[in-house]
Image (cartoon, rainbow, N blue to C red; front, side, top):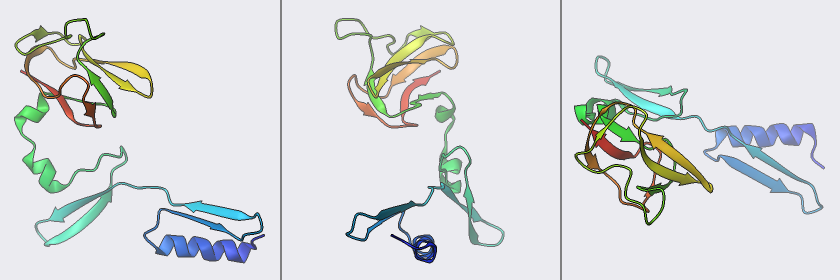
Length: 152
């Protein structure tokens, strides 16, 4: 059994460390698990003062000033994965792909499916245009934010 003072000391140790999780057991059946909430941090470089400034992003997306400056106009026309999962270009292995390079699409058209946790999620076009590039292959594992298609 842990006293309140013991728990306070463990919390202080966790807060002062770079650990995200701490689990302690006394060997007699009592254990305690402490976790720090993850807070995404963005490193911004202040050109006027020459110092780095860290700011938390509420939406969880981490973007540095350097990354923000290197975004090209192509990124504005990129369809990105909203989740981690398996990319499928067609509804079944025997079917033809939803879209191919050079095909015109309208806003709301299904572009692909991403399977995540045994659920099939249809990814739709966010804008009308022509498919300029398919950036992943059928069956590839995709990451959150990874470019799937480029549209012009």
